[in-house]
Image 1 (spheres, one colour):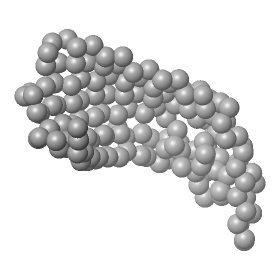
Image 2: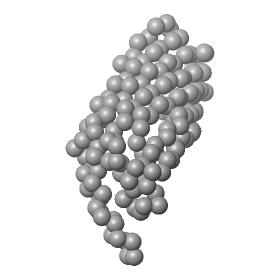
Image 3: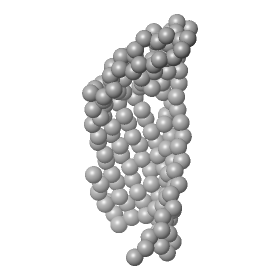
Image 4: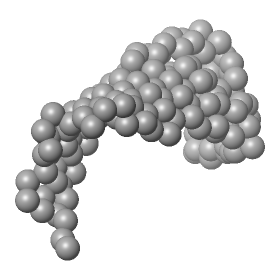
Length: 151
């Protein structure tokens, strides 16, 4: 959903339900020399909320920014890889970017920063060496697109 506040400024809001509780319940890994029991996954439903704004500096140059939040979709001890606890947790993302149009050409540049998440694993399915381990995760993503518009 978006709303044009002024001719230069548009704001938007997005909400999404993610039905993870009915997805991917069991993972079997068959490795020679490393017997692993099946991993039974305990996913729960999640939601995403996002807000953003777009400001038209000139008719050809647009600035964008936003924030998104995704609720945790993994129950404790139920992650895809329990020895990598960072797959669990609430996700917070900041975004920024710009778009520029020149004649029939468009360039869009976007950056997203996933704020650091830390997770803990009590019992690892891989080995006792990983029990009570802590891991962290954060990332930056940059996307650049070039487009040619034809009439």
